Length: 79
Image (cartoon, rainbow, N blue to C red; front, side, top):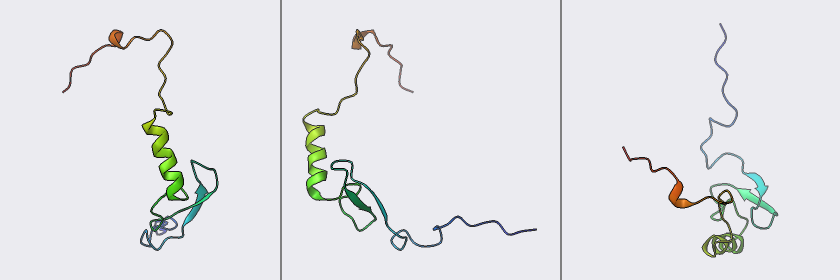
């Protein structure tokens, strides 16, 4: 019988694992996705604050279907 296979990278502590480089959601530039990056997933404080400002000014929205009325939605009781 064979031993169970270990998943790669699971035996090291999260702070010891290799950092990944991802795209910054604000500027699209490279961003280090690691525990020591205080701004992750953003590349900098500027990009993090830019994104926060967009949320605060309601630039990001969840659209409802045309003609959708909030009052016509069914109300489900909490359990």
